[in-house]
Length: 253
Ligand SMILES: C[S@@+](CC[C@H](N)C(=O)[O-])C[C@H]1O[C@@H](n2cnc3c(N)ncnc32)[C@H](O)[C@@H]1O
Image (cartoon, rainbow, N blue to C red; front, side, top):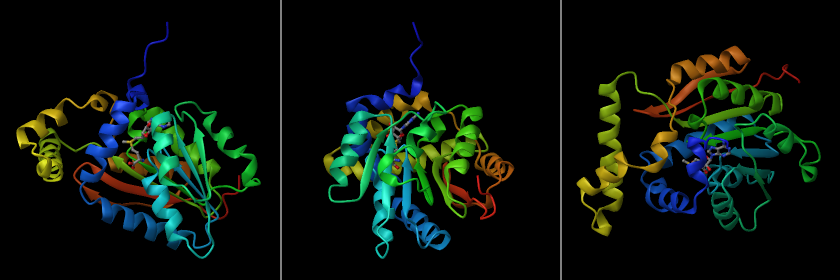
């Protein structure tokens, strides 16, 4: 019998609902993160035709990007391995040029499933965004996924990863935990939850066991090794980091 993967927790309806209703709205600096994603994508690829949101959840990041490119109306691919999350994305994106794809990027064949999407006419993504998702992979697989994204991107395209990254010390991790619990408490206080209850839920959250965190500096170095240019960590608050890079125009795979 195959051992159950720890990140399979995301395929449950209950965790999907708990995340979308109880956590997503409490993520600190979420509006700023999205604003910077949109700015960077527009600056790198003003004529974006195709956006891929990898590990899309309900599609919050890809949705913001589709709204940001109003003049050329790009298409979006919303990819996730959780049926309940893809259902939430479908509901969110009614009326948009969006394709929903059930893929597991732990397996390298996810790339061919994206590139074989018939209705896209062979165009490659100009923007690949991912939010709080790839940290469930081993470091080896994270590196491989970043390379697969590089190969998939159009030359000049940008990869932006909004990610849960490792603190440099246990002390830093504790500061992040306190900060995040305060933010969750602020979000849940109107519904009568105490900080102690919020903290207990936070420490016992079911997706915690699926986390494999890596420092942002290390992950930026991986991106440079792969060939991405203009690699940077564009925003970071404790363990929440937005980093990425641009595939050089001359890197035409
Ligand atoms: C914390 S949620 C983030 C959702 C969304 N990106 C956001 O910013 O709110 C992580 C998402 O990654 C998806 N995910 C995790 N591992 C995956 C995998 N191996 N393949 C595809 N999707 C995955 C989960 O199903 C879930 O929707």
